[in-house]
Image (tube, rainbow, N blue to C red):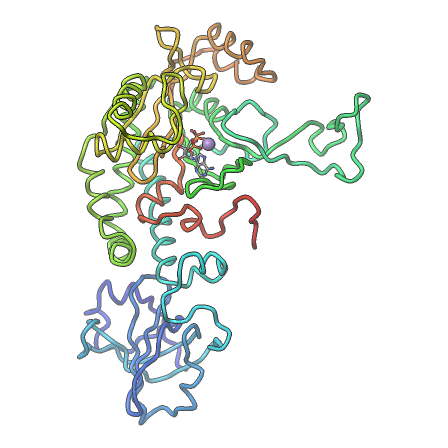
Length: 468
Ligand code: ATP
Ligand code: MN
């Protein structure tokens, strides 16, 4: 074949007039082939967009034998003339001139046939599901959101701060940790009292995968002013829910000189920015997901962008839930002041009571982490959870306790050890500061309208599952 620069299908549809009447060179995977003995139509997808490019084969120029390998899933290279299309469904198409088949996909065994597959089936074939329309759409949206996140913070003067994935701090308290060790598990060196001897381990002490970069993030914020982290996080909790993964990505901004109100303002602006970015830059993919999975998707996304989030103290939230209960609303888990709210409670407030996102603040200190700033009432802390329709908690954050003595008292009360490095942020030049954590996959869930968090990450990890 003659050497012509390859064009992506996305580029062709972005400016078809630039290519019309010219030879184009396209490469991709065949979605479908249909036609008759005179003409054959191939729908070609190259992953750059959800849209397929129609390739037309004039069968007076090609033999049946040449087209035989072109089945669903095969990969081809085509050169031909881009012309306005007479058929409906597409504006332009390619009149095939030259064909090269890269790889066949035997229809007898290729798992992704053109009929739609269930998401459960595709989860079993997770190594191939990025080739489906649905996962293509989800993964492109995921990319756009990741880019929007970096852009949002960069444009605001935040610095991307890299916190460690392997940590020896076991006080993060956000969830059960996976241990990292090179000790031989079938021949453990033991200390005198029969415990594993971590002095023999790789790091000379016990180490784990991080459950949150926040504590280290605070070291960044109290030096660079405003930082954010964006990286993988690991939790060994046995939560088999549609909202939990064992390995997920988290964004954790941390800001010096921010009080709780500033923190809430930032969280609300941040989520709205990301949702708006996806609406503006992923229209084709969102349209596809709306059509096939969730007829209210765009309405819900626009609603979040256009409306203020409710801001409500925990104590008021509990009153509303207790009222609802009195009026006959049943909940599986008990509601009382001091209870950690379950997802059903959060979703009641958001979906049934207020019908909009809610930022719940000032939780009882007993159910929140040790580093949150104590309110004057001595009972509640300046926590803020952002609760979303269909998702429940999407963000958890707080103003941090900046007073050395108050924080030390909490550390002692809870018997936390090895915190000296963290306490130095309060010991030297302490400042009011705040931050929060957004679960990236929960944001992707919300924006795509998918139902299960395992379907918004390419290679999900969850209890009893670690494929590829
Ligand atoms: P949940 O109560 O839903 O388990 P959490 O209180 O443990 O959440 P945080 O420790 O505050 O959550 O973590 C910050 C954010 O990280 C959460 O708001 C959520 O968006 C996300 N997140 C937490 N755990 C998971 C998980 N296992 N998988 C995916 N995202 C998670
Ligand atoms: Mn959790």
